[in-house]
Length: 143
Image 1 (cartoon, helix red, strand yellow):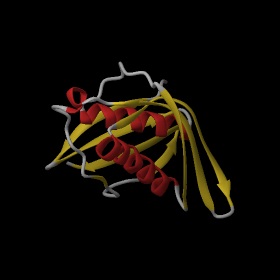
Image 2 (spheres, rainbow, N blue to C red):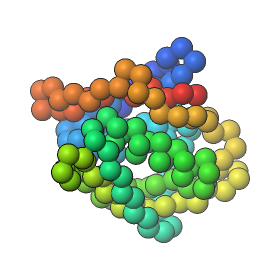
Image 3 (cartoon, rainbow, N blue to C red):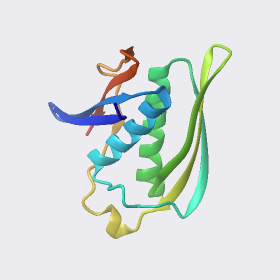
């Protein structure tokens, strides 16, 4: 089964249910799902490279930090990561370290018009589980 996501409405918020064969596939799929909610197509290709490192104590914290960082890059710097070429997660003591290498695309004002704003990624109903050789998560966004 391929990594995939399903978008759903949640009261005044929006959410995604994500599946991935690996934990890294789950994170990459979560980013694609979030971009889809915002209204960003997958037609962009990065014009420069960027690296990102995040450290958190749990997979759930790491996923929220990762998606919030992508949202920050979009809302403050008008940039998206595309494509994500390398994403790894490793244990560093009691914490998890996320390393990302990705292309970066600077959005124009016309690219930004009509996009849906995400205020924040929430912890509401957030849980990452592994079932039948797949990782699954449900993420709700404050719109």
